[in-house]
Length: 300
Image (cartoon, rainbow, N blue to C red; front, side):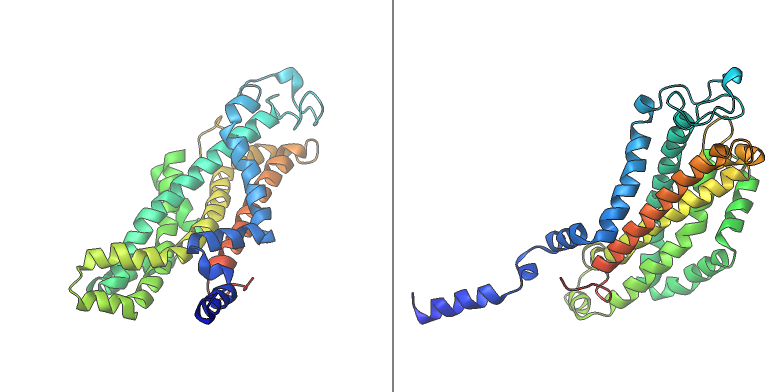
């Protein structure tokens, strides 16, 4: 082997492994090694699996009444016990998980579309920035849960209205995240080079700016999922969510609060399911932030 060939081989050997892989592969490898992310993914994965398999693992109709079996504690027959109408709490909690995941996905999807669109327009087109951001600021001036309560009070209690209310509440927050990323990317040299070469605005946004703004957006959406699940439970607890007897974690806890002394499992078990979901999503979001945010990334 010639001296030049040996030099090239040595140079290739000292190149970090991360630089010889695609960015996606590098990020995936770091996520797999990140204990917080893996823990959060496992916790949230249990809830998602239960939600998807609800028709097969719930066992009985969540609204089936059995007055002779009311207030049965957790046992081999009734894993999570029964409520004040003798309904299986296991079945109701599992179906409640299905509704919580569905509402969370719906709100996240609406935020991903409309929050990204508004943020991209405000960050890239200076003439639109002031008008769009003032509307955003007006919506963000209200505490999130109070605004959601106000919107659902006007629209009426239902799962669809909960999705619309939470989308109205959280889209402005997503838009600000995207706007901040777009403003930074808009001034970078590679974007200015495309502008100088005559690239169109929409092409620049679609192909050069938005793909590079995905990392903070993904992190934001993961935390948003947790906020949505918690907010939906709060609205259902107040009677502004899905209309009973549709089971949700919030209305199960609302029905069980007057029986806390005699049947604490009615409010405790759905509360535990809610805690596991929010904890898992927050750990998952923290892991994504550590890996995808270059300012916080720990070199492996």
